[in-house]
Length: 378
Image (tube, rainbow, N blue to C red; front, top):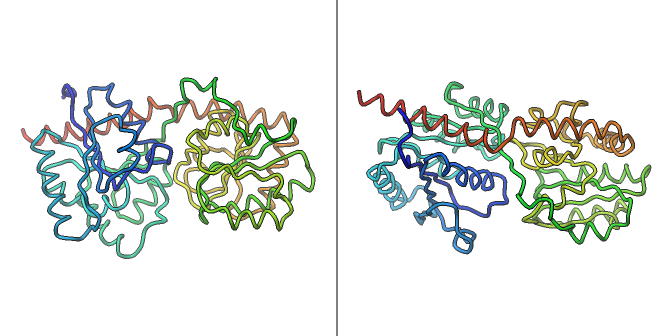
């Protein structure tokens, strides 16, 4: 069956912070591009979004006003929502985030809708209670979209969803149209000429292990003095700032904070780092690679599906600070090796993480599910 003119697709999420966070950015880009393929997207939130209220969104948006999941009034709202969109001709609901994944699949399936859920991390949010619920929900989920094989595997193992229903679609990335005119950030301009930059784009949370990077950077500074560390991401910097002082590197560590335009920073990195203990498919690594920035990252999650150790980047074991420092030094001191990583990274990421391939992967899945639903009537 060909896709109808304006085939409706419903997206359902907990709330929406802004289009700069990982999942929200991917959803924003998907909705922007899917409109070009005769789909009519609509976004529904459990809770209001300040960002959308102030800046709008690429499609129409509704808010259910659900703040407590297992309240009777919340269940009634979801039932009404499911019936309403089915009556309006919608056949697919694509669910993002945790709360919606826990409370909505059974109800929406019983309303006659095809239910898709997304998984984009290694399950750090799982606990005993929600896993029990998710394993029941698995019987009512038609498909799962994961952004890498590692997440597919953990979703199968933990939620007991058959592998045949789990589809890997890598994140998509597209540079800004005016990327060539992006101004140099003030923090970068303040660094003295000739200084090399080690950079990381990550929100400041324990799971990101940025303290490991500070310790490794201090070791690098013992051998290379003309190098600075730039940390781009939101969060409380007090503990990291104190650690930088204790290590004697506070003068060459820049905490840039949350930035809407991370690309403006990444383009000036000499090496891009990610030292997390858990990752799905990192948007930061994708952006590093797109701009030809050599990558050093932990051997975890989807990192190993983007980086081939010693070929287009370096992988190190979680918490191995000595290896991190050594690999940083290797790239900073060996221009030929760094240039090899640059070329191979940029080429690889354009092949596997284009916006077209990400959008078309979703459309293929949506069409297959709609075709199955259509055939069931005959």
